[in-house]
Image (cartoon, rainbow, N blue to C red; front, side, top):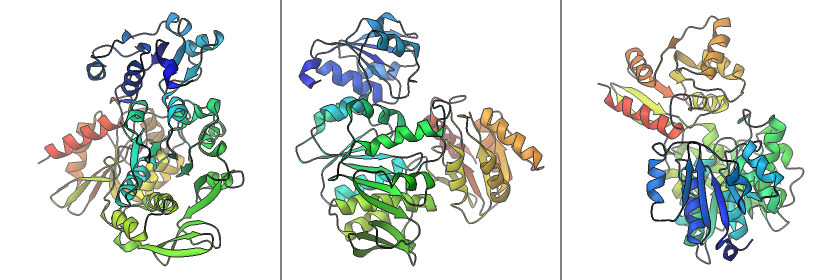
Length: 459
C-alpha cells in the first residue's frame, strides 16, 4: 500500500497508549486523510495527555473498551505493538480478511531511506543513544524512531534525502516485518535472554521474532551480533548478510569489535585499528561495554573516524534509568536502574559495582526464572529490600530456602526510606527491579521518576 492510498481509507488504531507511539500513528494517518478511529481500553482521563496532542485532528474515539465492529467494519487495523497476537478483536479482523499492521511494518513500507535497526533483550536504548551521538559527530544525518518515547510513523515527514533512520525495534515491532518481508539495511542484536514470556509461548517463539531483524536482508546488508551471547552467536550461522561480531574477548580474523589489553579494537576484512582505551570510558558495567562495541561497528561501517567515535564514548555517561546516578547523600550513592525489567538486567547491574550494594528489587513477573538472580543477590548485596509483586514473591521464596534475610516494603517511597536508614558512607543504593512495573506504576519510566522524586526528598 502506498501512502497516497491512505486517503479516505477507514482505519482502526488499536491502542493509543501514553508513551507517544499510538499518538504518532494516529497523527500520521489522519494527516494522510485517512478516516481514523482510535480505540483503547484506557479511559479518557488516563489518556488525557495523548488526546490533547490529537485534538486538532478529525479522529473518532472508542475508549475504555473495544468493539468488535471496529475491527470488522474497517479497511485496516493498525495495532499497538504490545497488543497480543491472540487478541479476540484481532482474530475477528483476521476472519474478515482485514489487514493488520503495526507502526513498524507501515514505516518500513513507506520509508525511502536506509534503516539501522537495533534490537535485543537489553541494551537497545543505550546502543541507540551512543549511535545517534556518533552519527551526529561524524556528520551523518540521522532521524530517530521508536527510541524510548519517540514515536514512529510521524518520523517519515521529517526525513530528508540523505538521512539514515535509527530505529529501536522491540520483538513486537519486529513481528510486523514478517508480512512485508523487509529488514533494516544494518541490523544489530545486542543480546538475547529470557523476556516477555508472559506474551510468548517460550524462548523459541521470542527468538524467532528477534530474527526478523536480519531474515530479509541481502548480501549488501550488515548484521552485528553479540559473540558472547550463546543465542546470538548461533544466529551467525544463518545470516544472509555481511556479519560483524562484538565481544569482550579478542577473536581472530573475523570482522567486528573486541577488547584486547583493555582497549577497543575494530577489524574489517583483515584491517585492524585501535578505537579507545577502556580506562577512559565513563559507562558502568560490562554490558555497557558490549553496547559500546555494537555502536562502534555501525559507526565504522558508516565511515566515522576512530577519533569521533572515541570522543563520544569518553563523554557519554549513560541513559536515564540505566544505572543512573541520582544523588550522593552523606557519602552514599543512589542509582536508578528502573529499565531493568528482567532478572538478567539486575544481575548485570549488580556486577557493575566492585562492592556489595543495598538493593531495592521486585515487581511483577513476566513468567521468568529468578533462580540466578537470587544467587547473585546472596553474593552481591549487603541489604535487600523487596517491593510488592509476583516477582518479589518468587525471590522471597528462593531466598528463604537459603536463609537470606531481607526487608519487605509495601511501596517504593517506604523502600527508599528503608534504604536511607540502612545506608552508610560510601554505600551504593541500587534500585534495579528486575521485573515489570504494571502493578504499582504506569510504566518503568514512571517508576524511575517516582524513585528519583523520593530520593531527592531525603534529608
